[in-house]
Length: 272
Ligand SMILES: [Cu+2]
Image (cartoon, rainbow, N blue to C red; front, side, top):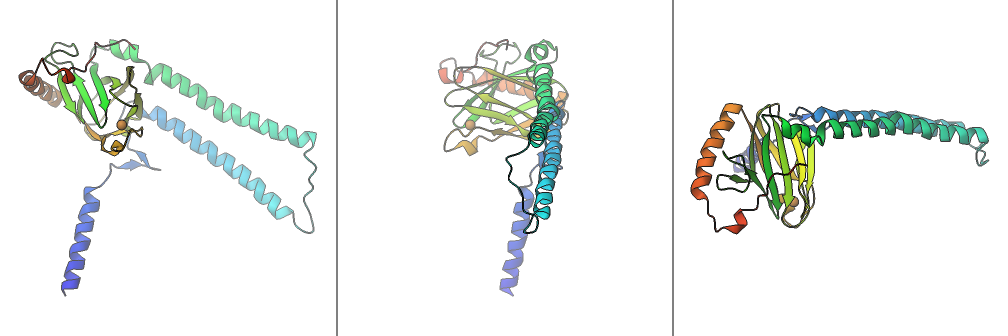
């Protein structure tokens, strides 16, 4: 009886653990739920690649099975090194794949980078843009908000650790740097990722379309505690965000210490 009871307790505990560790709902073949304005550009490339791979796989596997079924003891395969025609067909097939698969992928990628993902200058000009500086170090993400004066590295800045809060429906423009090694700032639910490289400032921007909490991950193995670089990005309604910003600015100003040099890691906003 005790055994049954402890077994039942074990099952309940296990079920609770699985429920608590529930990842965000995924979409179809393991893609994290996309809650961004522009993530669909990335998903389109992935779906196109998957479709092309399936078609090529079916053709190649079909050819192999056809040869396998056709040739045997009674009908041995002839190794003639290929005829002009068969080599022509092979080279033609490679050219067709390059033209119909790699070509569109390459062109689409260039357009997407140019028009959307690396179009920092257009985003920086938008009146409602939210600007943030992110500094990666072993092993945490620090985020800096410019505070009411709109300038970085001043005493009204708000600085958070592994906790970024943003409003929904407006562009978020982030500049990223690193203190020590290369890290990679990754927001799977927004389909954006950018390296944090010591000695340089990189850009990244996205727009959230849905409130909620999403994962911030480090996508570059950066040392033994790499796995600890997990943060939470909270997407708030515009009103909630303004409230949080006001409260945090007041707290930040009270805690400002001009002599704490390590705390003043921000930089003057750059044009990227
Ligand atoms: Cu890292």
